[in-house]
Amino acid sequence: MPSYTELRKTNHFYYFIKFTLNVYSMLFSLMGLCVLCVGIYAEVERQRNRTLEGLFLAPAVVLILLGLVMFTVSVVGMVGSLRDNKTLLHMFLCVLCVLLLLQMIALTTALIFEKKTASLFQSSIREGIKHYYDDLDFKNILDYVQQKFSCCGGDEYKDWGVNQYHFCNGTGPLACGVPYTCCVRRKVGEVINTLCGYQTLDKQRETLHELIHVRGCIHAVNLWMGDNIGITVALCCAVGLPQLLGIILSCVFWNLLVDMSQSADMVDFRLKKMEFSYSELDLAGAGWCMCLPRDGGYLPVPEAEPELDPIDLHLRKLKKQPPRTHAQLRELQQSRSATGLDEVDSRKLKRDY
Image (tube, rainbow, N blue to C red):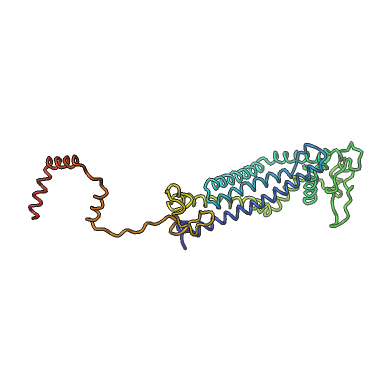
């Protein structure tokens, strides 16, 4: 079993990390595009059907922002992994780290300041209840939550008193009542009585247990999360683990590209610095993006020169030297005479003779 250090030097490891990160980014870019399209469609419908300006809660806007962020970040990661662009990969890595860090900070803050978080949600839901019949997106979401978690309002059922159709000073059929999604259902599939919450806001909660749900949705959701801790952890992991996987893949691939960029035989990284042109390279196997590594590289390998004896090497060096002038030869002879080299050379010749 090869070690990680040996494995990361192989081309198979490079291909695996590269295309895994590319597929990961492509899937999230498609998801972001779908969320963005749904958000745009919901916002167009909301603008067409609403009758009140300045709505506080707009789920369609949240979907648009979420889809836009997912699509933009994923496209940066996809292009960076496909083209081996270290700048785009570094940007993708930093954005993922910042997003994951912000989510962790928000979750930690919500757990530490639980009361302030609950009051913030309560004020937001009360503001949304004011425009309950003017924003179909918020109406559908709140109706689903009230039916799913058997709750009514934000903090309690009396939150519905802020709605102009439900406060007790009104004269309509909904006055001093709550929507039918707050009502207690005794049988599954029974016919819904839309006026089951009539005249309930002015009554005490002890007398309403058989008619409507008196617990607020904030407390009901908190109790459900505490009773279903496994599902809660699974939801947190479903949000955080894909981001953590993207961080790990992009970090490994970026470090791999940094090591590869230090090699002199990489097409995209060092071609200009090595002063080679594309016509001089054997790009078979480089791929259409001209960035895939190959065993043996792409740079031309010079032919091996035959071994030469020392005399030939000395003659080749002499040929490379420029010819000397008469003045240079005269100076050389005078220097040799002054140092006694001529006398030594003459004695050496006589001895050899």
